[in-house]
Picture (cartoon, rainbow, N blue to C red):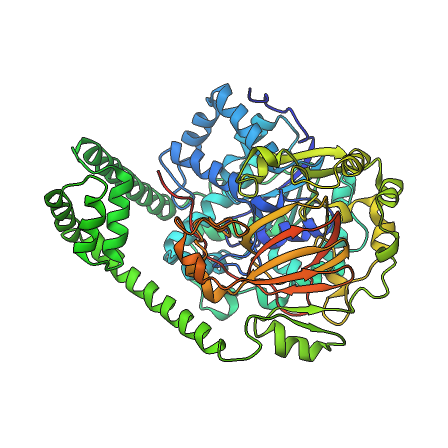
Length: 637
């Protein structure tokens, strides 16, 4: 049953509005560092092409909002006329509102939050109705020429198109925010003077009942480096703004500051050129959409004797240049006639899309051959297949020998002086945090793919209840308090944070909030084979863990079918299904209490607790630790 509109923990939040490329991502992250959660971590879009410092918005709600626009024959890059969109949104059925409320609650789980998506400029009335809460907002402004130039660099949109979008989004934001509490700021003010911005933002948040966290200004300043502001209008010979666009921009500048009841002047800022440009883009969307539907109808009307799964197998192997006779032999062994298979291959090769795929496949094979050669050459070194165990590794050596070379190492002395080594017992955890609500992963025994389906395994319990479970179940894999639980950021966790310190030789002490994670579980808990998207330092506080490490150079041998996950059970690999895994060359490390394993970015690892185990993982290195990844998408049906 869907929860109704307004149910669940959505009582107080900040909506962050502003045109794409206007600084909404930086604003959302700054609010996050001042104490407002943005989303459950697995759903949060951080590093990606076009914004290597992060987008800081929930992926599932981006998709939901784009789906809303698609239902109105539009997309973010070709928004519909406001009156038409508003009419359709007001007519949204209860089921759509309930679906929106449920989607929101699945990622915004706390009593206060911030949500950033530029599409909210267009869709805010729908979400207010779905969530049934007061709207309190931050509105981010940026020079339209900078926005247009940034859109051109990221999305290849011409300047006329970019300015038309800026005009549309900005005007609709002003209309939708009228009469509401709004903090309006310029992106350049945030970047150039983050300390003053934080002071004003805190004051606005507190006036409206939000609880912020002390400090944070240094982390905001560290995040908002001046170099992040690309495409400055003063250096670009910016495109000329139309008369209405200039008037709208000038009026926006007059609105900077905090408003208890936002009252912009809603003059007619629509410029004919912008409206014509957006109308042309909507026609383009319509053509693309209709062509797609026509192709789907044609595909559905075709009578084929080869099921879609085998068609996909045939196309993939043909593109990878598997010998035609071998393809015929394999498919014949599964009951497909030779004539049928050869006819299918001939039709496939007559399609230009096949040749585009084949060209891409050849590039992929070249990359794979380079990775194999690199791995073969490294095999000449006597240290290959081993992980060094070291003491007293200084920062410069750690960078040169391990971090920059993407090489794992066990560090034996980072936790030598930690009180946690002796004090962190189940009794101590219960005494310090027993009444705190914590998030664990539960019912994992019912799902072979519990790691991939993490959302449905989340459970909120009192910490003392989980401690009781551990006392009664010292071994097992059904329940586990894993990294993205936020325990160390709870107000009551200060004593725990005093029991350890980030290794100063490698870690940025000022950037620890939200970047140190606690793991606590029984012996037998397993984290399946996967890789992380950043460098990790895993410190074993108590108990032992066994880790299998696989070099990212062995990528094609681990069957990375989706995201950061492998299809292979590394503990019991099925070589009949995954024969290449026999060449993955895993390295096994047993991590003892007090030892730390540096897991370089991209290294595949399978982790099993050998005892009731407590661990900490750190990501706040003093070195850059954010990277742009492209991952395999979920397999299509």
